[in-house]
Amino acid sequence: MKEISGVNHRSGLEVVIVGAGMIGLSAAYFLQRLGATVMLVERNFVGDCIPNLELKRVLAYCKGTQAGELTERGLMLAEELAGELGYVGSLQDIEGEPYIDDAKSPGSKRAILLSDFAKDLAVHCQQAGVRVIEANPVSSLLMKQNVVHGAVTAIGSIVADEVVICAGLQSVGLIGAIGLSLQLKAAESQLGASSVRQGIPGVFTGKVPLTPTGAPYIGRPVGFDGLYLAIGHDTNPAAAIAVGEKIAEAIYRSEDVFTLSLGRVDYSANQSSDPLNNAL
Image (cartoon, rainbow, N blue to C red; front, side, top):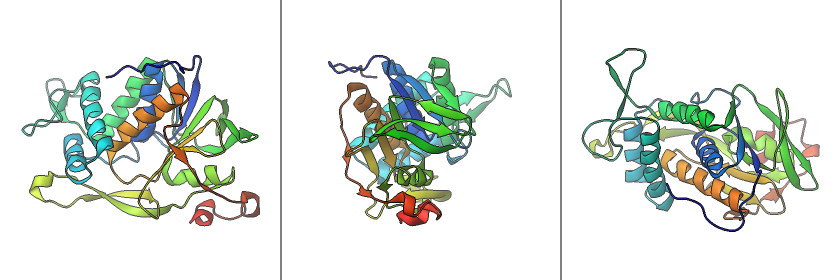
């Protein structure tokens, strides 16, 4: 994987990432690799909201139906990460399915699922020094004078230099509480479970956040420091991995690679209502 060079590196950087989906996991991996102190906070358990579909087929679906720069970069990163995680076989080869030796049944092998990949990447991050906290919902963000400097969780407040929000639909209330409006709606998503060449339809994988235009919210909201958003993605795990890498680089270099201009809301007038409905 490429090294990051430049003059704006931030020593002693502490980052809290809210949401352990593919973007959150990828951002955590790359930030710790760059030398940041990273805490990854997930309201459920890692992998719970990630479909149990074969990793290779999911990535083939992304390549065949959602081609683009981020998808291509994500496919490359996924291949390299698979090697680091000890997977046997290539994600790119047409023939065969990558596998891992099954520790529970010595001598046997099992196919790699997308949820396996997420869980294994979380363990890999932990071994590298990332603190992963599961079953710990974030209730609010710590902010002073438009500078976000941490998050309030079920087990206490966490102070950080940067906060990355990539918690899907659960992000709406957090962002609304600091006066930003996100136009999101919950939609049923399908992700290709079988080879694109076979033409087999995708399978239902749960609710995903969708924006009115289909374009996700990625970047630092204009007028706010210490905050990055990655919200509103459809099901493209390959691109999600690449987005995590780009966010890590942007934070590490103190560069606003992505900027967002979001609407403002008076959340205090609506705090007795459902914040998700308020943002629609």
